[in-house]
Image (cartoon, rainbow, N blue to C red):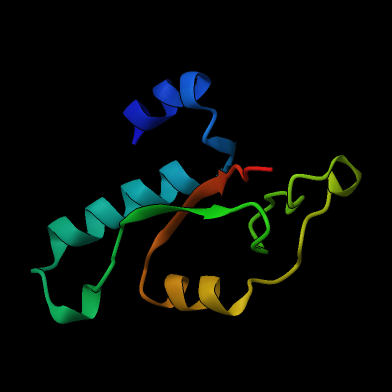
Amino acid sequence: MRYELKLNPLYRAVIEVNPYAFHEVEKADEERKANPPTSHFGLHGIPILVKDFIATKDKLNTTAKSYTLLKSVDPWDVGVVKKLRESWTIILGKASLNE
């Protein structure tokens, strides 16, 4: 995951990183080491990026590539993000949009 973030200045794919993501990844790794893998885990600990127009509740801006929406933090997760979190997926951050 750190490798992808090192390449970001070149590709500019990630516009914002979840401030809690690294803590969540470490926690998921510890849980996987402590418990044998089962179907319950599903996407447990898999980090993903969501596009910038998808609302997330973890202090990430949802700007849809618009400067007027900067500092626009949503208090809820949209349905798809809620489902991803229920399957223990980690929202790494927001991915950029093309024009």
